[in-house]
Length: 572
Image (tube, rainbow, N blue to C red; front, side, top):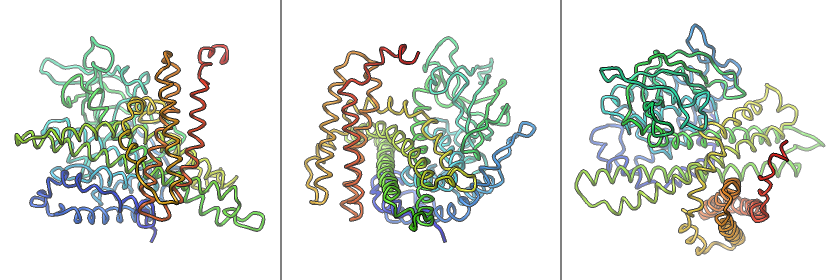
């Protein structure tokens, strides 16, 4: 039987080396939840065993049931009939299967019907679902809106909305984008107002809303009409049956996921948390989670594309041999494999930091309520938050850009056949293209990561790694990473010394990439200490990363961006 978990050696490796004992202990209230819920773990080993069983089940479901239907879902798409969106039949079946497996509330508290899983494990289910059908992942990941209601809503709102989302009884949507407010969410105009009784209502239009036909909508709206920018925005929850779906978008990819334009006509809504904090606190937190999910989606698509390319290259013969044995093709496949494993190391490292930041925040609150000292935990929490806030956009940037390259090369390996609808690879290439656009474009991820890069948030970690001793087979790779760090430091100093902000902004991409190469390289060196085969991956990665780093360094130091002042002449 095919299984996207047990048959993926690298995913299994990441699971075996998660090392999230502290995070799980806090999440499980030091395993006190076992006294209240029969299916709660009694120890860390018990929790890991439970995660393994669920992941194995998801691996089987995605490989055997969901993946074989994905092509039909893509071709059938969604239709709008009399104002009602109808999913493709395969999509409806998949949602029913995920609901039956009780996966629609993976990270939600057991109190509301969830599995109480850490983000790290949730991202593994997300990766596998994305590998099977990227469109399905969009609907699956929208359970994150329930997390937002759990964190910032009232107890009444949790009881009204969260349990319905966790059970799969209701689907959800994150309703942010407008015709004139895409990446610039501060420009949102959809109006939120109150009647004399203090009840809230919404009026306006939203566009490009993933699963906008959902039962429960989490909506960002302007509640302060006399203000502009982020401070005037608040977050609301409402029911979708009070909203009109004006149209479905016709897209390049992820065709099984409906993207809607919505009309709010005095729609009754409930305020989440406090006014004016909708964007600057609640949505930013929500989007960070979504960005990590999109990174996992990109990784799943890339894994699917690589598997198709590897299979095709082994079967297709040219010049009396399988094309897999032709050096140019072999080299492409190796590069794809190294990219996948470095990306996976980055994703799950980031997920662990996110888990640590969130669980330590929970621990600090617990200690506060008990009137116990919490300064040490607070200090560690702040560090974890800083690292996760750097790594989340960096991870989305690297994994989504990489997915586009991998699917491009996988299609190239197929040759002309890959351009045909009969082969899955053309769908993967189309699906990958959206990942570095939605939930913040790659350019916005660079902006989000740049501050942490300039502050050298991982500096202490890099210092320690430079002092570490590595086996002789890895010494060259370790030295190459030291060179990358020296290049980064010199380039960063040069960029910070520039007085022209536009030059600094453009050079940010090269600096963020340098920092990302360095971090991923050290993650792979760690992995190489646990698995002999990983030494080959780490060595290959370091060679390629150093070459790219030198290019980035030369681009910055040669001030190749100085021609920005002549943009008008160049562009015409």
